[in-house]
Each structure stands twice: as structure tokens, then as C-alpha cells.
Image (tube, rainbow over all chains, first blue to last red; front, side, top):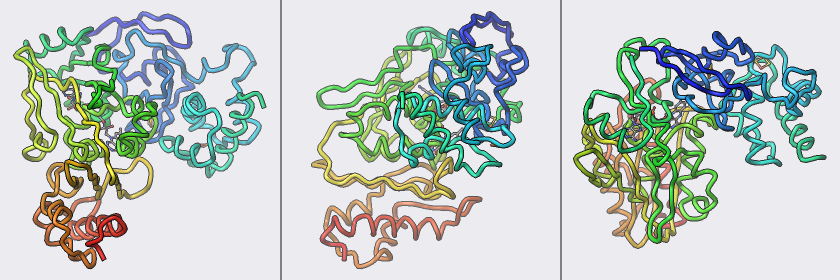
Length: 160
Length: 276
Ligand SMILES: Cc1cc2nc3c(=O)[nH]c(=O)nc-3n(C[C@H](O)[C@H](O)[C@H](O)COP(=O)(O)OP(=O)(O)OC[C@H]3O[C@@H](n4cnc5c(N)ncnc54)[C@H](O)[C@@H]3O)c2cc1C
Ligand code: FES
Ligand code: FES
């Protein structure tokens, strides 16, 4: 039995008819064309599908679209303040500047998780960053530059 | 498949009473793993609790911390009082999956999922937590240590929801939680143990070594009575009375028994004069 759900994605209200079994990750990618949210494992391990729901990082492959009813969803496309413009979010800038990515597959998820991490803890230690990103796997970088990128974004966001 | 989205606890309980085959869903982090492959699960109907806001908050009473039926690991990680007073909740919460699991996964879901390897259950049990169940028939309370009776068997009827978890506030002088997994992050526990000591006595709770997370009364007796323990092997007979580990894809029974004994021995060596 299909249902109509209402949710805001990157600030835009949507009303959509969905099958109850549809995962949020598929809604974002296939129905809203927001393909910045990647799907790596579909088993809740790799973190590539991480988005923010009401400001908290969640794996969108482990959430039904209907469970996002009435919620605010933010994807990598909506992170920068001037979304849709050339303006990047400090985390996106930092991943670019510090070479925090190679193939880029893990990057949207890394950035969304790092976003929550920095909201809770604006000045994380290296250890805290590594712990915070445990749910995100990267097969290319070896993580060093990802940690550096998060440190650099943290400094930027603190106004340093 | 259908997903019902009640907006209040009363509505949730009535809906469940009318159709006890509905599967309650909190964070969905257990129910939705491997979702695209588990097509048989798409045939079922779900009662999604995530809109029942009254189940989310936790609160501190004079003599207890009360977790709601939807309280997540992250809600507790964000609460400085929990770090100070009931630090094992934090230790366990921070080791459940990763941030994205901690933001959605609930303590109640961990209890009802009833995995022998659950990490939230041992610390709650070592703190003498009580599970509050509600249905349209009324409310009942079951100590977590008596909640399970077999693998995935528990004292919850299909029309009942876990609405609260009551954790007594006591002064502890020993609080230990150990999780041994294949790797540090996102790993299912091979052997785990939680130990506390307060005026109420010793509590030793083991996970991944029996069909359900359980207290270890024989080990607790050794600690209460101050029986001499000269090495980790001295704990093995008591451990064998208390738990029944098995060989599985993650580990062997022998490894689990030995590691449990060593964890206990080394953690308690400096705390118990009878250990030498
Ligand atoms: C990547 C990953 C890593 C994980 N790592 C760990 C780990 O390290 N340690 C660990 O212990 N677990 C782990 N888990 C399992 C899971 O996250 C936890 O068990 C979590 O606490 C489940 O909570 P939930 O709210 O998501 O439960 P759900 O999936 O919503 O439900 C779980 C069960 O509880 C029932 N239920 C839920 N709420 C209620 C209620 N209020 N009343 C009655 N029944 C209810 C459901 O019907 C279902 O049977 C992991 C999961 C994933 C996906
Ligand atoms: S696709 Fe969701 S965690 Fe891998
Ligand atoms: S940059 Fe390729 S997976 Fe991380």
C-alpha cells in the first residue's frame, strides 16, 4: 500500500507517494535525482549513504523513506550555504585542499558524518576524528588526509 | 507490506492490540540491515514508533535514570550526567556500530532484538535495569536480568511495547565494560563483560557466551566471598557453571571461555585483595 509522505530535503518541501519498503537512499537518488548520496554496501557498513536527518548523521540505506516523514533531510548537495552556487562548505573546501579524496566515492558520506562530529565537538583530537569516522570506509586514501581535512575544516569553522 | 506511523503512545498501543503481528520498529538498525536482500521481511507489517515523541526523552529522577522506549545511544552520549554517574552506558554506547548507528539505534531495540552479542544489554544489566512494558492491558515491570529465557525468547507479549528502562542511581566503586571483537570499530562482540560493585553487591554480566546476555552468579559468589583466585584459570570452573559458549563464525567456545576468564582476572587483580 503506497503512502504519501512529506519531508524537506535541503530546505525544499516535497510530497511524494512511495512504496513503504523504499529506502531513503533510493528515494534521494532515484526520485529526487540527488545522486551525491552514494550507495556502497547497502548493509549499513560503509557509510557512503550518510545524510543528516534533523541534523543527525544516519545511514540512508538503513532507513525507510516513510520514516523520514515530517523530517528535515540534508544531503551533500545541500550542505553549502549557497547550495546550487559555486560556494562550497568549509568541509568540502578542506577535503579538496587537503587531498581528502581520491576516487571520491566515500567523500559525501565522510563529509556528512564529519559535519555531525564537528557540530558536537568543534575541536576534536585526531583520535576523536578517527573514532567519529569509524562508520565510514575509504578504499583509497588510507584516511590520513581525511583526518587532516577534518582538522583543517574544524579550524576554519572555529574562525581560525 | 505496510508501515503504520502512530503519533502517540496510546495510538501505538491500540494499534498493536488490534494486530499483535505488527513488528514494532524504533531506529530500524537491526530490522533494516540487508533489507534489499531480505525480501521476505517486505511481506510483514510494521509499527514505526519514530513519530511517538513522548517515547524519546530520558529523565533523571532522584533515585533513577529513566530511558524512554526510543532513547538512542547518542541521546545518552550527549548527556554529561551519564558520563559522570553511569559511565558504562557511555562506554557501551560509543562502541555500538558507529555514529550513524548510535544516532538511531535505541536501548529498547537492543533489548528486544535480544542478540546474545548485544552491547547495550550487559551494561544495563550490570546496573540492575528494569524493563517497563506497556499494552492496552496495563503496565508491567521486569528486571532485565530475568527478562530472557532462551535464545531470542523473552518476557514480552506481542502486544507489549518497551516504554521505559529504569536504571537505579547508585554509588559504584567498580565499573568495568570490555568488548572484544574482530576489530575496534563496527564489529560484533566475540566476548564481552560488564562488572559493577555497589552497596547492592557485585554484578558480573557476560555477552556472546550464552544464548542470551546473562549474569554470572558463580563468578559473583567468588567475588562476594573473597575466594582466593591465583590466576585466570581459577575462574574457569565458575565461568563454566555460568555460561555456555559455542563455536561459530566469529570465534570458538574455548577462546571465549579463556578470554572471559582473563578479562575478569586482569581487570579485577588490582581491585580484589583475594586475587593474586
Ligand atoms: C552497522 C551496524 C553495527 C551495529 N553494531 C552493533 C554493536 O556494536 N553492538 C550492538 O549491540 N548492536 C549493534 N548493532 C545492532 C543495533 O544497532 C542495535 O541492536 C540497536 O540498539 C537496535 O535499536 P533500533 O532502535 O535500531 O532497533 P530496531 O531495529 O528498530 O528494532 C530491533 C528489535 O526491537 C524491537 N523493538 C524496537 N523497539 C521496541 C519497543 N520500544 N518495544 C518493543 N519492541 C521494540 C523490534 O521489533 C525489533 O525486533 C549494529 C547495527 C548495524 C546496522
Ligand atoms: S550504502 Fe549505506 S552504509 Fe553502505
Ligand atoms: S576516496 Fe575512494 S573510497 Fe575514499
